[in-house]
Image 1: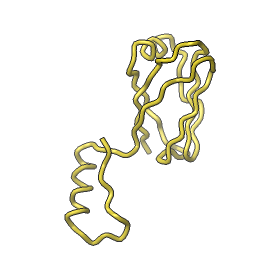
Image 2: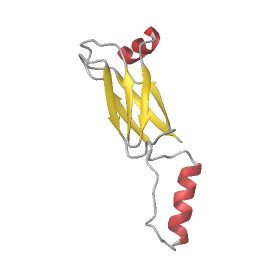
Image 3: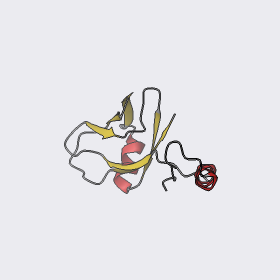
Length: 104
């Protein structure tokens, strides 16, 4: 779930408190869903919340994604500003879907 972000320079304490309460409850704008590219060995994910030093955490959302993890063939191979790259097995499966959260 996404978190409410008050406008920059807001002095409305209700907006600021709402935002802080949502963050404390675990909401984040640094999450997403990615499906690994078929017939390729890498998938590039663009996310404005990603930066050098961030840690993209992936959770399998389909059986084929779980099998990919079980095979040990999926890993985050690079992280930079606005993007991270997942290296994975090259096959024709089109449903290796992951949920992700970016930390840091």
